[in-house]
Length: 230
Image 1 (tube, rainbow, N blue to C red):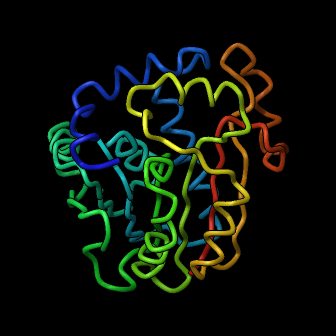
Image 2 (cartoon, rainbow, N blue to C red):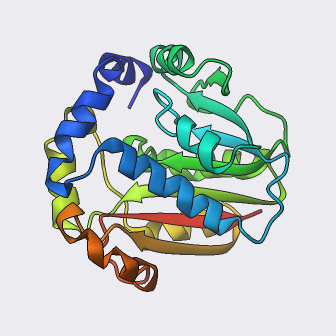
Image 3 (cartoon, one colour):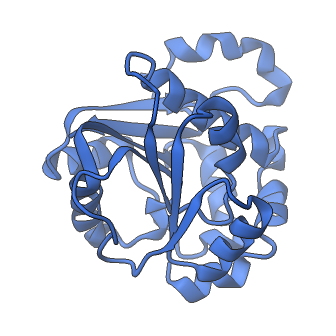
C-alpha cells in the first residue's frame, strides 16, 4: 500500500477498524493492548530501562497509549509512509513519541539504533517481494541482541479472512502464513526465530482466554506474531 492509500483512510481509520471487527465482540483497544502486553512478556527477561523502540508502520498511533502504560520508560519512534497518519498521531499523542516519515525503502536511522522493533499488521499491505529487503533493514537498525516482534493476521482463520476481505483499507492486502514469515525472518539473518498464534476466543468466550498461553502452537488463532533476535 502506498502513501496515498494510507492517507485516504487516515481520518476514519479507527471507526472503520471498529466496524470491521464487530464479530470479535472487542474494540480496537483490545487488539492494540494485547500486542504490547505480549511484547512486554517477551522482553521480561531483559532490562526494560531506557528501551528504544521503533514502531514500524505506526499509522495514527494506535499503540502509543499502551507503550506508555505498559513500557513507560521506553523511548518510542513512530515510523510510517503516511505523513497524514503521523500528523494525526502527533496531534492525538503530543510529546509521547518521535514521528518520522518513511520513504518505503530505506529506514532513516543509523545501524544499531533500537532495542526493539515492533510492527502491528503492516506487512500484509507490503508486496511480498519487498519483505526480504525490509526485514534486512529492520535487522540493520537493531542493536546486537535486540528483538524484532511483528504481528500479522492469520490467513488460516476464517473469521480473519472475512474481516480482511470486507475491510476497505485491506483492499490490496495479501495475508502471510506464519511459517512463511518465519522463514523470511531467518533468511534476513534473525536468530531465535519463532511464531506464536494468538486470539482464539471472542469476547463472548472470554472466560476461556486463560487457555491462550497454552495454544500458541495451534495455527487457528486470529492473529500471530513472529519474533527474532539480531
